[in-house]
Image (cartoon, rainbow, N blue to C red; front, side, top):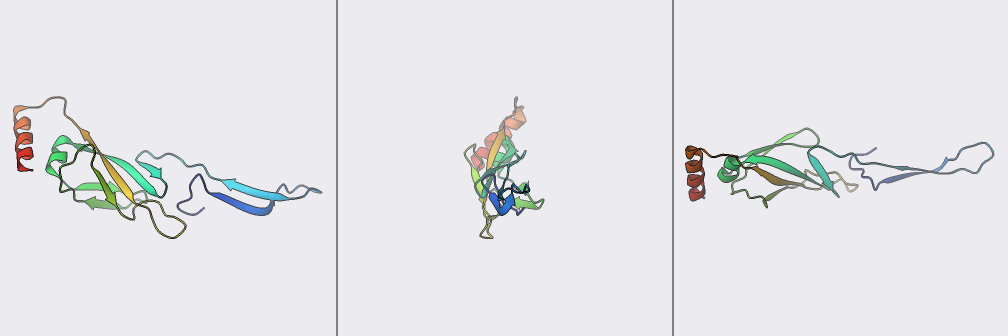
Length: 132
């Protein structure tokens, strides 16, 4: 099995199916079933992930650390205000395809809002928003 196979990939082995004595052979067709992943979701050759950030991180624009599907660690600088609609594209970090290229990784943000705000936390958020 090669990296990047999807549930649409079929391998056909001509003449290897139905090999019973006195019977005409047929083709053996192998199909694949894609397993779900707890972090990444496949969209063709691209990968999509949700990345949890605190409200403070979303406002301040801090670096984010992502472990790729193949186990590498990458650091991305996010120097903008993150909203629930923010999506960062990382070229070449998706699934491999049969042309020897990789799709992209799309990072969507899941902002965790606190249940309560202390006076200091409110002041910090207001100041951070004023700075942006």
